Length: 401
Image (cartoon, rainbow, N blue to C red; front, top):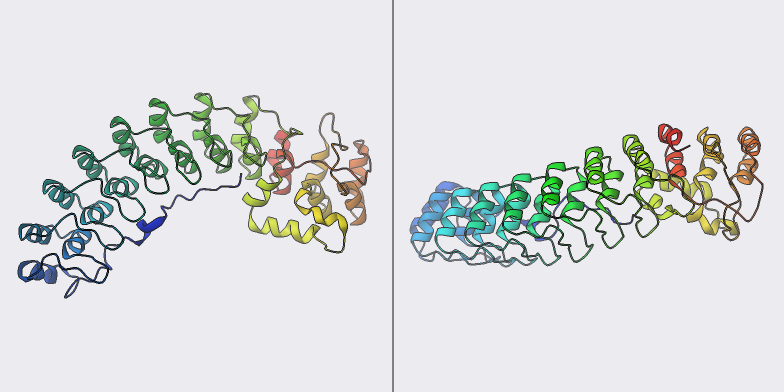
């Protein structure tokens, strides 16, 4: 699974702040009120095209906003990055100011430079009352930012169930996908295990098996991050546990990789087959495993003077455990009908040869007792069992054996 989503909102929203706008004369309430009452140009802007009204809206100075609007300040003006007074107020949760601006006829669907709207900002920050007001004044619930994100995705990833409910009741599309990664609200909610959000999405027809650009599903992300109740909910709604992402990893592999024992149990109880020979999650391991694990793999196997080390990314967890002398390597071989001569992979040696070379004789003996054949041209693929083993998740190894 090559795409790991961040719960943080990207883009210019990170540039929005409540205390960095330096309007004419200062930033405290007394100064702003004085300017609001006395300035000759209520629409004067600074170097970034930000107005006094924007500054007062960001800081929550409702009286100053009222004075400025009464004196003719334009509430629809946009700063150089496209942000409006209503966006500042919505982002920071200043409900009274948003109400004031809406009553003065602002356009609730204005977008800043990255396509974000006041509704998106209020949704991602959990300002339920503001969301309700914006919707009441005609905010478009399915408007997209330029990366394809919607208000529903932002509320879902942060677990704001009340806002999710409001958006869905106003017609938000539950299965809309963003442009860059094709993620969904259900996938975003799975990252932190927001089951209450997921229930609402399912009530409005969300598809549990939609995949992003990398083939990732909500089941896979929930399994990877240990969101057990979310996995239960997905299973209850018929999620397909056999789906694989682009590099071959499935939910069981990802749960085993990160040591999510309860989720491994759930998936096994639902009939998912462990250690499928068709599963090659090597890339998933290298991308999702801890950085130190990736470095360990490189240090153990990469030798530019040896031809077979050119295939480092296809090395097996059995090799790792054998070279380190860990008992998991022995457990790894204790499978029913174990076959250590699986399909060929060009010019690579097996774990047993490497274990012999590194002096781990006891492990070699244990492997040979299980009927492993020494073969310089064969190896095993990286499976869920190997992922659990290489990361030291002993309890999961026992479950998968």
